[in-house]
Length: 111
Length: 113
Image 1: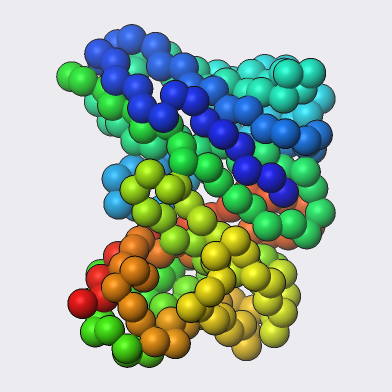
Image 2: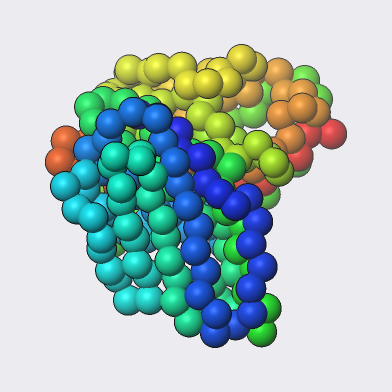
């Protein structure tokens, strides 16, 4: 596996606005996953996008994947205060490999 | 629902003590992981295991060891706790073949004094 690099490291927006965070990685992948972590808690899986997919939706989440640029983005539409959390991407190259995470994007949604 | 349970939510130990952090998963997952998380450093992988009695070093194994005697249980051991091991410790499990979605425990906040 490999570590994704999230950008920006911190993001502060008003409630109702959209939040976009990005992930870059280095080598080819089978899929890429996004996770959320509420303060002081474990990570929770949000969404998985496979390498042959370009876009995927789940409720207010929209994930895109550009394998040519080795990047992914997570868009949260109409953000809510409850979306305040850290978000991590996990690129997966397949096989019995260690799963690693980066520093994440810390999102603050201001009511 | 998959459940990954860490034995303690908060733990305070003294320097030099031997510390055991336990993690149990209830879904017959093959792979289990231990991370520590520190501000500004993200999650760092300490050890992982892809089978019973198997273990692999992660990125920061120094000062730690692990044990996996049963498939559902993965223990992290601090042989002689030091203050620089004060951190949030997170355990995760992954089904293995067919799925790479990670399921996390609630975390253990360890303070070494």
